[in-house]
Image (cartoon, rainbow, N blue to C red; front, side, top):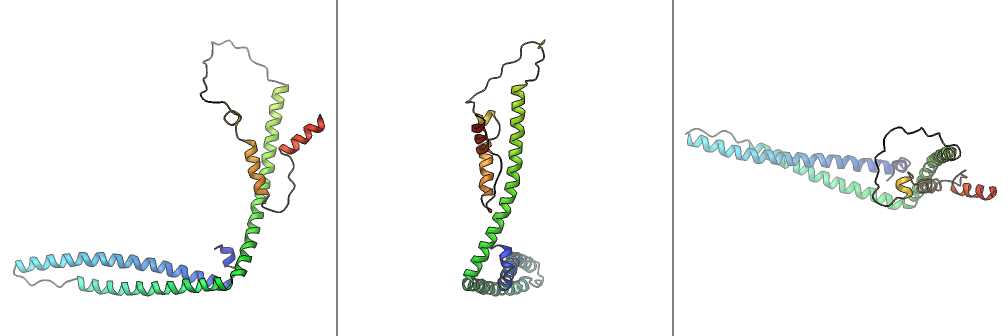
Length: 213
């Protein structure tokens, strides 16, 4: 759930904090149990080998180390079981709270959705205005090249190599980015927020063209 929503519900925030803490402790307890189990298994093998060597040499076997580790393992397993039950109870408390405050939480989520949508729309609007200015600069440069082409230098060199293009030639692979796709995506993002009038774009260009005609 969104942190901004949880922060507005102190009791739910407390429950979420409790669950997160128990999940972390549960993971640490599982790692401890696994480590102790591994150490206990190794200690058992080592104790057996040392006892066998001592008996073959006519010496008194050394004290075993496995029992102490096994005792620690039993304690760690019990702690893990208790933590598991605490986590189960905490998750149930959180679920109960969410069920009892379902409508309130949905309302807060709707507010957060609207706020975030507005932020996205505002950022997209700024990007769209910049994109339209970029398109206008490209169009102006293209128009300048068409109306006033740069003088061509006389070629005194040898023949240039021929370029061969494989595949179909389209506006996508020759003309650069897909203008309509970029602008359309940004306009969809702008539409997430409140009604906003965006100047420029393909529609305005078409209307200007009709008036000029």
